[in-house]
Length: 168
Image (tube, rainbow, N blue to C red; front, side, top):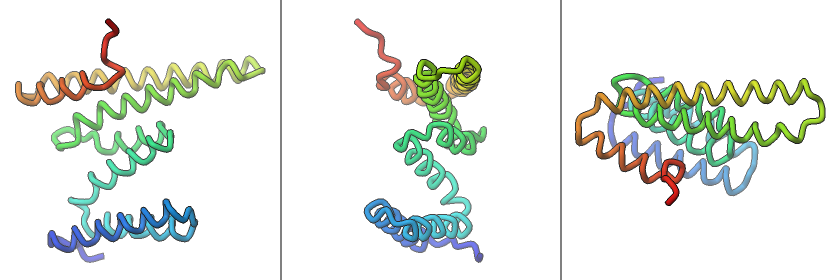
């Protein structure tokens, strides 16, 4: 595929992709979903610089909405590249999604009748939360390196999230 570079082409492709995705969501037809996914891949190949981060971010957010937190964390992990604009946000969101996945899995533990299955799920929870903690530590280190202005923006984002608000 020839690499496309014109801003007008990029905007037109993104508009078409948004329309195809909306059609797929409304019809819930597998053919429409495949068409949207095929076109998303075309856009990613045609606009590798512009599309990669934006489409991965959208994919991660869509996966979060579907409560597929482990898959969303995987998408955020692909965006967590030092030096890129998405690095700090991707580290934070990856940790948050891993935490959410651990919480979701922990809710399944009491439902299990077999001890071996309970142990397996408990191990998965610990693994998810350990990875989440590692991601949050990397995020914290990245935030420490930001300028003062950057710290204010990040602090507002973290402080505004309900999980980090302290009860009165």
